[in-house]
Image 1 (spheres, rainbow, N blue to C red):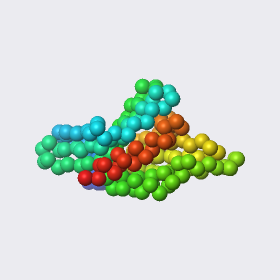
Image 2: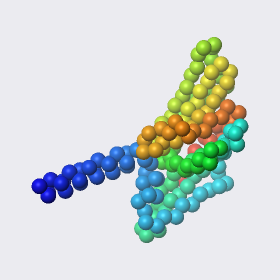
Image 3: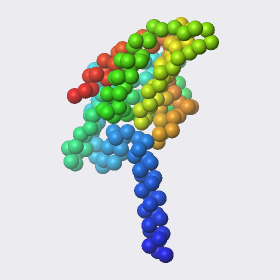
Image 4: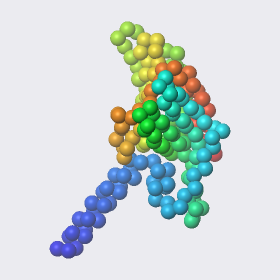
Length: 181
């Protein structure tokens, strides 16, 4: 009887930890599971978007170092600061950065000046473990929206969007390419 309880508890913890690790970036897991960590940020290489409400979305490369083992991980950090005093950092792992570059180069940049017909729209969506990036076109307006994720679930209450900053998406592509070290 006691063995069954231990086995059930172990299986439950295994399922929960597996689900947590599948839904979060390797970078978040590295930082969260390291007793002592140093995070180096390169503020010289940053793409920043500011909405009409003065909300700020920043992307920049980081390197996290486990101070005990000296293991390192590089990633793209995204900070979202919204008008309701909401702030969240999310990470995009290097393997996701490759796909993000491809997505922006092949689907966003070539369509950044596109228009749609009346009552039509087009949306391009990139899903990483910790963020979802939307690029939408409707008539002659274009919108970029970024949603954060909590353990794999999109947070529809806290997101950043802008129409006026869409022309700065090529700057984001430059940042993405700069973290390939």
